[in-house]
Figure 1 (cartoon, rainbow, N blue to C red):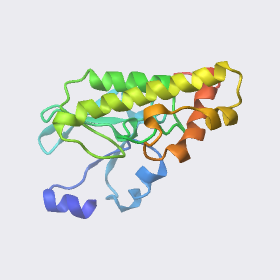
Figure 2 (figure 1 turned 45 degrees about the vertical axis):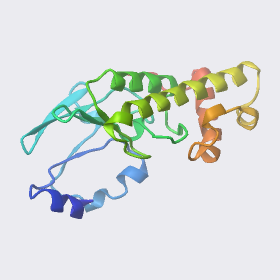
Figure 3 (figure 1 turned 180 degrees about the vertical axis):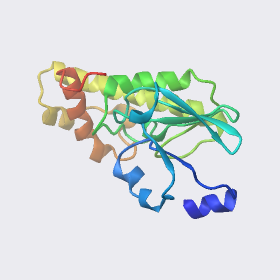
Figure 4 (figure 1 turned 90 degrees about the vertical axis):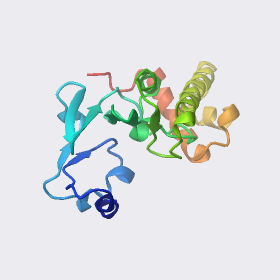
Length: 201
């Protein structure tokens, strides 16, 4: 990535936004310049920080807890682009190992309310603007459906394991990583229903 950036701009890499703290997003951090400024959710003054990237205004925003408790998005107003990191997984079954399920839906709603023409996911295809909003709405629909299905099974008194085995994932059965992620997702939604998630600060 660093080598690719050099082909696009002679400017040095000065800023790095930690959109997700998961290893698949931070494993290459050692390759970053030693003097780079890392922006994390804990380091934000409030829920937003503006930076000047070579004359372009960029806003780092915390829209709430979603895939993790510290998801950050990067908004470029002049281009109407929102880089959502793992708060948006395009056509990927909702992965909730570190998630806050119901809050995640609200984060997507906040993103959709912004003046954005292209939403860039942390996983999955980057869509053209004409399909970008449609695909983010589809991901929101997946979140809502999965949460509702797990709540239904929880209300029947099933264990998380039994619920994962009996769940009807409907149109999301064939989404990427469903077999791997679904049991984890069920357990996390059970934790939310049972009041075991960390409350918001």
